[in-house]
Image 1 (cartoon, rainbow, N blue to C red):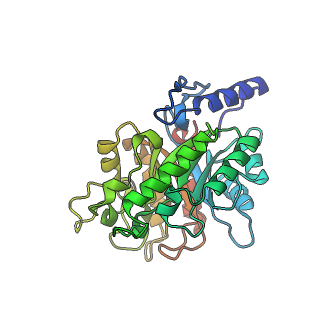
Image 2 (image 1 turned 135 degrees about the horizontal axis):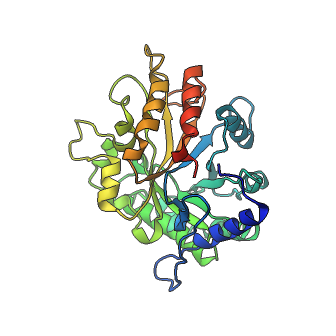
Length: 347
């Protein structure tokens, strides 16, 4: 993940990293600290690398693995430590767990944790936004404050688009989602958490981006630090393509959608972008296609400089796309491992 430093430098860098991410919710009257500088190219506030991009994974358990074992085994297969480790949580769960904290603090392998949190506990988005789960949010805030001080990525109910019911009173309108997202992150802030780096995580598909309510899903620049999408390369039709389809997918039947990268950079130009989940499936009839896609990504990723983190979805199977695991073939594993060692992903 990083070059080796002396113990003293590691400690100083860790302290600076925490300080750099203690950014306020707009309107609190607190001043933002200056950028963090380390001995590589530097990391700015909100965990934004000043050059290159973070390399991460949501390492789904394979077989009997736990999530923690899956992460360590994934890293062993690709020959490097990831920068970002993505986990999924629900109301009632306290996180990070002891095992996740150990992964974040492991000497020489410190990883940035990323938590995807669904706070509903049986309530609608609107009900959460009106305070229905405040006790759970407060319990989580107290736990994190007592147990984990490092900055971490955090999103509220990723990929909300296909759950939107844009009917008054449904509790699941775009406006209801915004109410929930803002309520959760602001309440965490009010309970003293200053190490939360807030991510708005979309599906990012042309179908949803073309909906009349899509722009209304955005919670606001004051409560969003990063903007993310979850693109996949799979099948043999329009969902298979090149690197531009990963970053900026467009479909002819949705001519008004400019692509996620274009939409985000035009509408929210100050925000870093993330692929919070991305994956590639072996292409039927083209055994070298997946490895070639990884190769192309390594060659072309610099053309998409606003993307500051790529977090792979490593899974044996998925109900929509299929097996994305990087070791689905030896050439695929070798090429993914190779591009993960590029200087661009080692900041």
